[in-house]
Each structure stands twice: as C-alpha cells, then as structure tokens.
Image 1 (tube, rainbow, N blue to C red):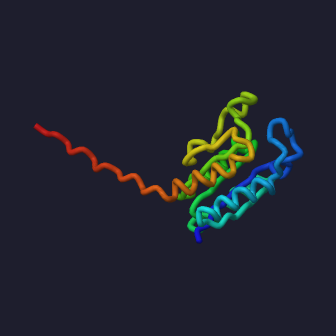
Image 2 (cartoon, one colour; image 1 turned 90 degrees about the horizontal axis):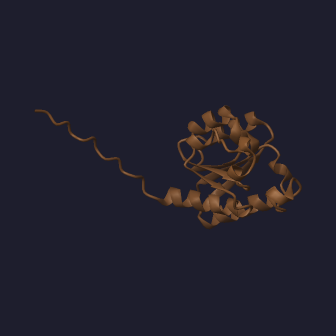
Image 3 (spheres, one colour; image 1 turned 135 degrees about the vertical axis):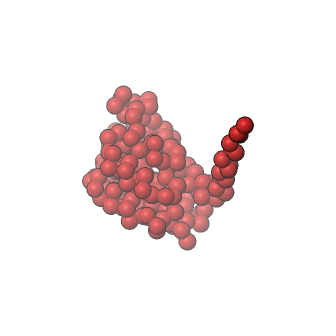
Length: 159
C-alpha cells in the first residue's frame, strides 16, 4: 500500500487550544485521524510528522523522496517565508498539496504570500478541519488521474 506523508508545522500541535475562533476546536489528533481515515478509504497509508522546527520538516520531505506517493503539508507560518521548505518540496516528484485550516488570503496581509505555492500541485484553504479530508481526497484523485500527455513540438515551417 502506498504512503502519503502529512506534515504539520509550527504551533499546529496547539489546534483546539489556539485561537478557536480562527482554527476551530478540533485538535491536531482529530484532524490527523480524519486524514488517516480518508487515506485508508482510498487505499493509502498515512504517515504524520508534526514539528515546530523547520529542519525536521525538511528532513521528513527528504525522507519521503522515492518512498511516498504524495505529501500534504500544513506548514503553518513557515508557508510565508520558508524557502528551505519550498526547496525541499521542489525535490519531491509526487503529488504535493498545501493545506490551511483558515483562509490565509482573508487574514493579515503578511499571510497572503505562500512561498511554497509555486512548488505544490494545489492548495486547500479555509475549510476548517474538513480541509484534511478534502486534501486527502484531492491527493487520491490526483494519483488516480492519468498523466497528461505532452504534445509533440510543432514542426518548423521552412520556405
């Protein structure tokens, strides 16, 4: 059974306690359980890593290369400034989904920029705890979709 890596960044271990008006009352364990159930429903194993340390998340991405089919990453505040995380994600050849419980675009201006967005397949944001299920559904759909065939280059016209 293929594995999907779920990464949770700094302070996400405080879900359920930290700013419930923004992040809700579900704990990280609740959200990981939902993700694990969704992955299993699609025939995948789920491995979860939470760290408050950028390097540990980079190491987890490196460890997923050639081993995991996809990565779902809720990078927390690292989303907005971690070029190290973006560079690591760029080295992973599988499906990559950026996940946010809140909608960063509807919050503080500094949260509007995601430095990891250019290297991921897609983003799920603003759906609260349901985002974990939606992200795993998106990964499963992406993994099941046939690869888009590239058109051959147009022949040059010479006179």
